[in-house]
Length: 210
Image (cartoon, rainbow, N blue to C red):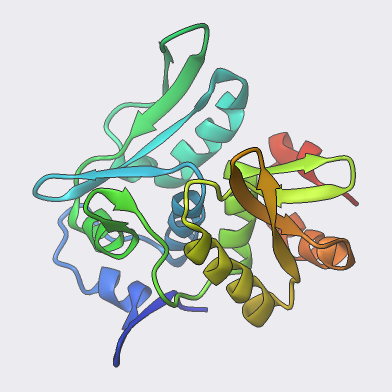
C-alpha cells in the first residue's frame, strides 16, 4: 500500500517520490517509509536546514524500542542511540539521522513553519498504525488511546476520520486535562489490536489488549 498525500488536485505518492530522489545515501524501503510515517504521527521530530533529519527521543525506559527503531534506520544514522540527561530527573535515550533528501520529502509533508501538522489526506498502513501506537499510544485498563494532543482539534478529527475510512476503526476525541486525544471506541478495540499485533515488537507487547 503506497503512502500518499493529496494537495488540491495533485496526489503525491510518497513512496514513488522518495525513490525518485537523487540520494547518494540510498532510498527508504517501503517498510522504512511506513515506520517513518508512524513515528511522525507519534513523538518523532524533524529539523531542516538544507535537508531534513529525523530525531528519535524517548525516555531511557523505552531504550529497547529506540534500539529497534535505530536498527530499522541505521543506514541513515552516523551515531547509535545514546543516553542523555535532560532538565529535572528525566533520562532520555535518543538518536538522530543524517540530513538527507529522503527525509526532506517527509518534512515538507508533515511540517509547516517548523510545526508538525497532519497532511490533508494520506494513506496509513497497518505497520504505520502499529508504530504510531508503540511510539505514542497508551493503554489504561481496557481503554486504548493515541496521544495526539500535539495536533489541533481539526487535525485530530482528520485522523479520526482516516481511522474510520481506511481501517473501519471507530474512534472519538477524549478530553485529557486541557487537551484532547484520540480514544479507540470499545467496539473497535479488538479490531484495532488485530491490525497492529503482527507489527508490535516484543518489548512493546505490554501495550496490547488481547
